[in-house]
Length: 120
Image: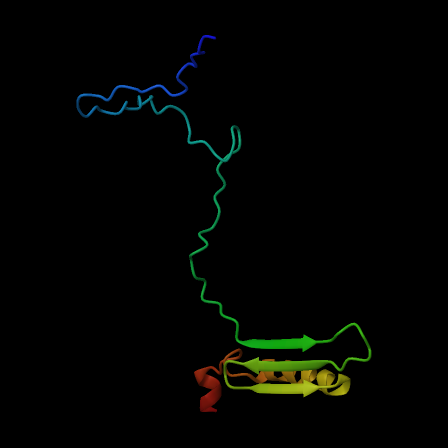
């Protein structure tokens, strides 16, 4: 019986003699307007998201009111001026919401007093 010869499954490539330069891309002429997201879509002039407009959150009101009537709701109101209140229960949470609204009208950070008003 004659032995079968299998072809080699892996070919051995030759190594180059020295370093070779990579193929360089061909620069085309810069013609036309810059492309948007897709062909035919103009580039939108969106505002710079890193630009600061000076607004900052000052007063917060957080209310936890579960859907189940068997769970007691709670509320928390706080401000960067130091005002901080916490309430547990429906009636107390409603009173805290009203107190939070009153604080927003009286807070020195939200309603700065002008110099003419302090002098009087």
